[in-house]
Length: 439
Ligand code: GDP
Ligand code: MG
Image 1: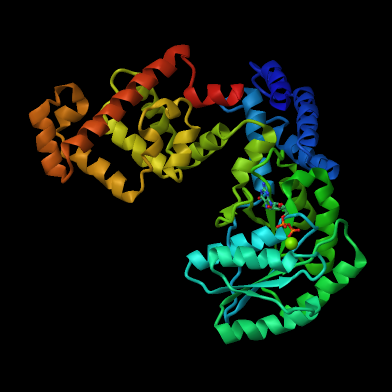
Image 2: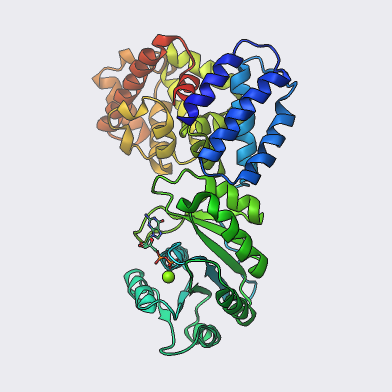
């Protein structure tokens, strides 16, 4: 596999103090292969590898990283950078309605995405209107009507009208209904064609949309470059939505489309079901492209946001028998800064084996409870939970406004994590890194 190939190269790089040009060349060849295999466009790959090479040659190797890991880190950083920051936002009109036009090839997922987008808006207390302007595909209007009724969003169309008629009339309909967001679903073709582009251009003229979002099927891979270029040239796309990422697409389309248009990828589609759109996370996509799994993204984020020294200290303590409830609390504080906790926990090797933790879902309320319980303990109890007998537990529950059951649960989880950490430390290597290199 790709990551195996990469790892073989990185293995050979190990132990060198400084990367030579030849070391880097070899690594670059592998990275090039990996990216092509992940369906990234050839030209995009060439530019990318050049950029990485410049950074990698002659770089002093960080004390804590092997040269191979150093290259991975550079590749990963550059990939993330190239795909841009997370921009899951729609540019809103200063004077409503905000008009969003979805464009793309047939089957890309425009109609599905239109409904998902409408649902996202509705959940944010907007009043969206869906506009069915695909007059070519039989039943396309009906498809949107069905989706609209599922999510309780009105759908506008004109029986027998042209796409331009529908576009024109939709704005009047929106103002009649008091809709503040108008989402226009358009027709697609199997291939780029002039008639379609002309029609979309004319619709753009009429609608003066605030966003033109290009919907791209992630499975199209390399071919996405032509599609993206063609749409962008004619319509000046403002953003991209990548669909069908729930499948086994390798993610190359993300990089390719981004490079071809320079437009941010705003959201991703993760299934046929109508659920709110998910934001695009460049770090995750970089991991997907590199085939290393989410652990890398965890390390990366951890490096950014956790004070590194503190993290190392914490890890050392977690691996020792001296892991205390103070450390436990600190761990959750730090982990919580990284993002939604359930996702973070899934990324930590072994965490899924801690019973009950899968539904910990540390939203603020539960986190405050955890804090309250630990704060109600004496320093001695925090250092040595073994002394927590029934009467101490009762006192802590009273002091923290929780129940003895809550206290017991927390202590059980703490014990499990401590056990797990002892177990994981068996190999003597750093937990996250070992996982990253084996993924
Ligand atoms: P359109 O022709 O661009 O309007 O595409 P549709 O919205 O009709 O979608 C085409 C097919 O792709 C339908 O069967 C959808 O259910 C499916 N689809 C759309 N988005 C996704 C997605 O994110 N994941 C998966 N698995 N299927 C999707
Ligand atoms: Mg459609």
